Amino acid sequence: MSVGKGEGTEIIYITHYSIIWNTMTLIIKCHRCGFTLYKGSEIVTPYEVLKRYGFRCPKCITHLSETPREILIEKRSLARRVRRRIPLF
Image 1: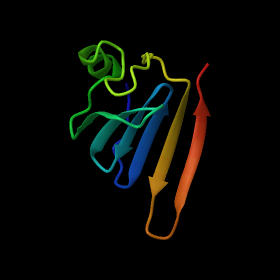
Image 2: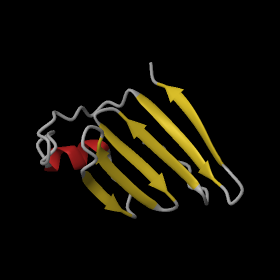
Image 3: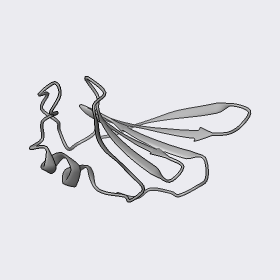
Image 4: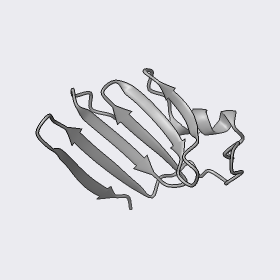
């Protein structure tokens, strides 16, 4: 997984789980219930995190796919917030 490290950059992968890259903090959440599967400053692959939980959310028991359907990239600034959607093929 290639992630650009710019200050104020936030990258979100959305499928049955979300990955949020927010100024040096990586957050992986269940897309259905919002349970935080991972939060830390180290970049880990979705596979590593989902494997720890057996590819299921421990809160809502939803099956978590390792392939995201879309990627959201957000750039934060003091004045405004910009969001771009990048569809996966």
